[in-house]
Figure 1 (cartoon, rainbow, N blue to C red):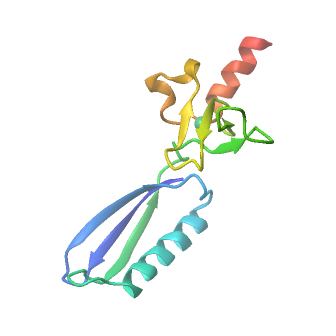
Figure 2 (tube, rainbow, N blue to C red):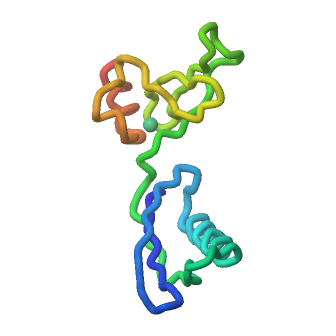
Length: 130
Ligand SMILES: [Zn+2]
């Protein structure tokens, strides 16, 4: 889910925080995540940081992040796992522990695959192969 949180700082200033969290699927989950995140922030303030308060949470659409599932049962020779996005179906490789993310396979190394377009792509593939 993509969402933004309107936050009021303890000095009265207001700012926005924008997030894209593919693991959150409902507005209720987003609300809970926002409350937990701000609560955690307030519980662990560093010098100079202001307490925050949520004014409002807006959700606006499905996440544009790919949601990767591991296809390899064991790590492939070369030290990577084969990954596939469960939403749009594109594939890539994840090296090591995956700190640097998933490297998209050659046929998907185009700008339009950076963001996940969800089920639309899968739908097109189905129509082509039918
Ligand atoms: Zn995707």
